[in-house]
Length: 349
Image 1 (cartoon, rainbow, N blue to C red):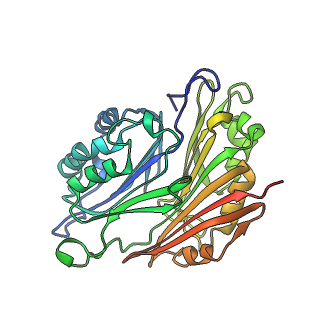
Image 2: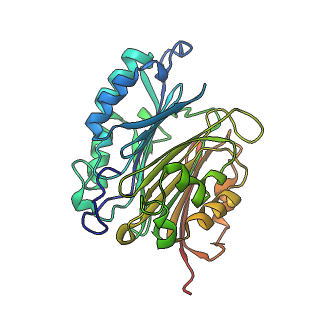
Image 3: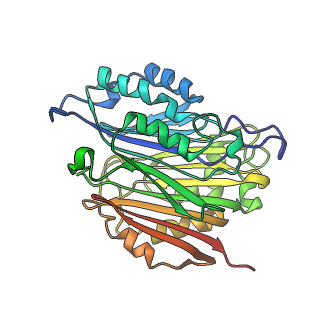
């Protein structure tokens, strides 16, 4: 959020994030001694300089290290790396040093799967190379991964969502196994937010991040989370939540993250979580009631081992959420994952 100008409308800030997720393994299967969390914080901080952001805050449990960044978040588990950055950051420029770091200090020597995604930018002209166009981003990713596939969901003229992942067929048409452990991700990407709600995420309205979290109801979206939040000056908000403990409500390694750009001219809120649920309808409804967006995009990824395996199909049948009507939906079935993309906007009053 560091790029936000000192007064509303003076300097544009791109709230839309670039989301990079990489799963690592070893080509000989000997992964017991491998762990991304062996990489020191100083090494991660050096990597983030290439991305053009820095660490603001940090919490961890036995399953996940969660970093609040000056531009969004980073999550590190045993073998999964997640980097989510907004503004004019350059996450794909860190791929080469990241792969070297992971092999040298964590012991992994092979990428098992890659997911790179983002909504369309409002001001792509302000982005730095290679993020000015999705085609440029794909070219960079293809230079590291030989079996990639690129997709665009939604209306390319207005609101759409880009995805790059590894082709299910893999190199030489030999099928990849893919991620076998339960995995799922829900994202809600919201625009045209209610100005009164957005005011909560300014220093004029809230004296601290904790106050903004409580006033807005963010602390009630998913229970039993340790919340690490930050309120920027003069406005803007970021939070990470990680599960207090594994149990019936929250599985090990669960997280949620929210990032808010409150300026009315370019308001934007992102919500993301990997909490496994057979249905995400209640979580989605709570998020929408909390932020009251004019329009939003939902994406749900779930693999066959996930408790959320049926959720993409369920959302495909869900044509509205309260005051929000669905205008576009696309369903994709990959070898090991199902994906739903849907775009909604509020009924005219």
